Image (cartoon, rainbow, N blue to C red; front, side, top):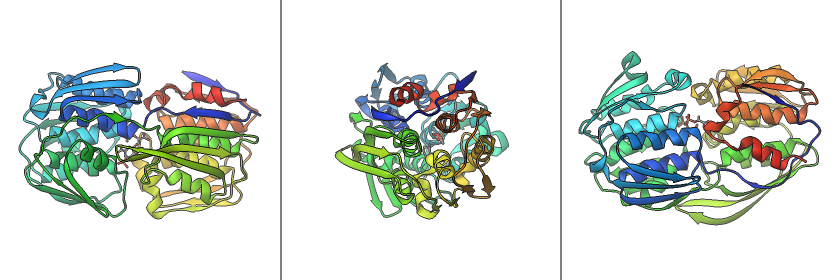
Length: 428
Ligand SMILES: O=C(O)C1=C[C@@H](OP(=O)(O)O)[C@@H](O)[C@H](O)C1
Ligand SMILES: C=C(OP(=O)(O)O)C(=O)O
């Protein structure tokens, strides 16, 4: 499918709410399925990735009903989970894959997992290595590095694991295996990554403590069901925050966005680059702060973006690269080698796409160097099946009078099925 984007000379004005947070929606379904009882999830993200998580647990016999953004999970607890009779399709979702492997490795049955072409290329050894250290029986292509993967669930040993890469998925997968294991599992990381697993496991009654960058979980304590209200996804909001910043005459307010400090790096980057942004924190639900964010069009300036902020903006870097192409000066992004393991190699896909649109941008091993003040032009572009690249292209098209052709816009439904509706609501 090719979408012709011609939104030039428009500004963005108005107030919207973005769909529910993807990371939190996945975890709510997973932990609700592990807990005995009924879990009601409101403002659930009905994106394809989170629907893959629902399907996975349905395949294991959990009763899950969905009415738009409300999901009810009814489970007998872990004892009630049944051996899946068919291979589980994880679609495009890395989060489902890595977290589910932690769970399945410790359950007393066999399972097989596969995904789409993109997920089949993404590294799974980052999670299968620590799980095998815990005693998991996992096999897959290249000794469990790639999907399809088969798991023979077994009794695991607790582990003290220092994650070698900055990954909340790895941290979470090991913690979930630890939850289902006798004894104390400890996961440590050098740089703090998103902590939704920690917050939500506590809300479901797990015995979990956080000491700085170290998480300690005492296993084999049953979870009890817990209702979850999912905040708006700041990673989805980021596209409109940047769009408002770089299109003249804009002012956009996004309501009820999750403001967990492990996710708000985009706000820090916008401030650092001189964008007019205001925040109003309103309340906290399930340990997750929620508030409204307003951005006005601005004259952004370049910045160096590196270090501890990177995991806090990891999914926002494609749209930050577009922002940088419109800033005064040269922006440098470093320490972001994790971008190479996403739905696409996002260093390559961002650079190729922004270059095609007329920006001056160079890849580096762990990031990119972006010259500002670019005059973007029309181009034939491709999302390469990566939802965040697709949305970045749509926002870039606001900056040129020429037509931008976007091949494969469908993948945007992975995280933001109503993206074009919201964009059209804001366009004036
Ligand atoms: O734990 C999560 O929900 C996620 C963690 C991040 O991945 P990594 O753990 O691979 O960094 C992020 O990119 C992904 O969109 C969601
Ligand atoms: C990297 C992402 O997701 P996942 O790893 O779950 O596929 C993303 O949403 O940008």
